Image (cartoon, rainbow, N blue to C red; front, side, top):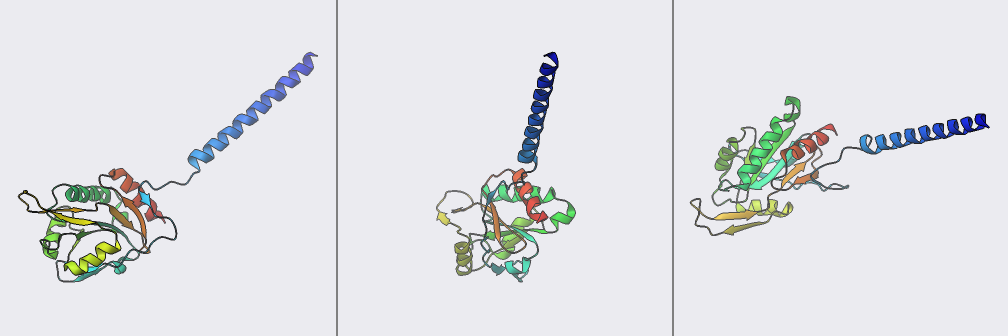
Length: 208
């Protein structure tokens, strides 16, 4: 009788041990085996192709987004007289690039397109972004050219009267758009997204 009880207890303990092992394995798969997820708002396949951007640079050359295939582009629309959103976002992108390894940073370009062509010449835009990083690219052009680009990327803009010393203000869409090596829109980040999220998602795309 005692022997039988001992055997039953041994079987019970073995069963409990096996169950605990299975739970540990399942937990590890769920929490550690799960692929890392993007933190920004991501597009699903088939990824939308980023619209062509063909605008003037400060040196008189023409920037073409399609020529940036093979690298990653962080695209933002703003203007040089912006009091807060634009400088904050450019500063965040600078921090994100600085957090990359040199070999990673070389594969990323930051492109800033104006929503205020009346005041922002290509030279003025480039001088503005140079305050954050001389590697950043500032673009402008005629309003008719820019309007096509704004439309392609769903950029809202509205000129607002203001008593500010900088003159009128421009309300505009304030999202960072991440374009991958194949020229596809992959992720967008809202204004004031944590820099850590931008860094995290850049590294994931760089690994692809």
